[in-house]
Length: 414
Image (cartoon, rainbow, N blue to C red; front, side, top):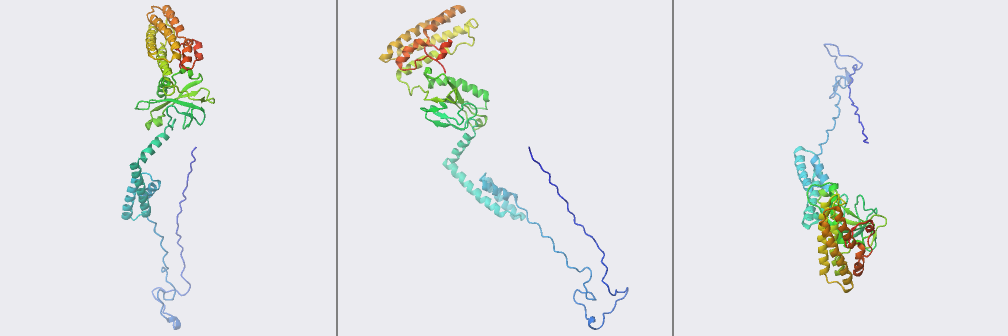
């Protein structure tokens, strides 16, 4: 609500009243003549400014004192120069306005010379400071800080592998700051990847969220390679640019792990990659991921009878992935303890590869189901438990396998 007011001005007028004042009592001068001055002491000549009878003639009263003249106006450029100088805002402009003010004051007789000079001095100091800042790199640091401050949903930077707490304990909604904490203790989130979006106009919230969904889901495997070791209550979250921060050059999306039960948080790092795994573990998980990615490429239609050509193409992709996985596992020089279990697993995977090849040649849905079922039994998660234990990897299959999902050869997704 805006409170408005109305001010009134009362016009005051000065009136002059003319009053006829009768002449003083005494003898009046007769028309056409003049009385002679009285004799004796009264016959002295009148003094200066006096009438013939010694009183002040009419109309000779002293004049009224004149009104004082108004002061000279204050120069507007002088005011502006002083304000810019005090605020240290646009110092070069303040300096120029001060010079203009001095020229106008000298020409027009206006006031404000002191203000103009003070503004010029302050603006000169501000200009010198800016020159020093640019020369020393301070201006660039200030601009970077300003850009960070303008990133509506994220005024901070988090790097891959860092863990943090949010002020409200939630990974949903707008975040303006985070506190970085050790991953060994309890924390709200863990960063597993950062990536940059392409330049251009702001694509909109929906497009940015879609990019985050697609890319973060894929990038998680490079950070948490053993998906069996990721707790089932862990989900993917992300920090994204806002419209305001996008205009300042912000293109970064940060991918995070967080607990679906926000108050519970996370404890310990979920990272298992080249920095934490040994050579045997790394070789097994890299080969396994090839199979997992092929399994994830299943057609949108869930049943072969609804899209037999699409399922046959999928079977071809899975068969090819198993060929590559088996080749990688056979080529690696395994530790003695892991050699036997891995060799047995490779045998099952190779047999499953052949069943997928037959499924790719199926002429009807029933034939596809026949070979698919045999392949699925050979790549059941329980088939990988022995090899995983020998390699020191997580050996408890995630519960979603109980719902009939098959990630192939022991892989799984968050």
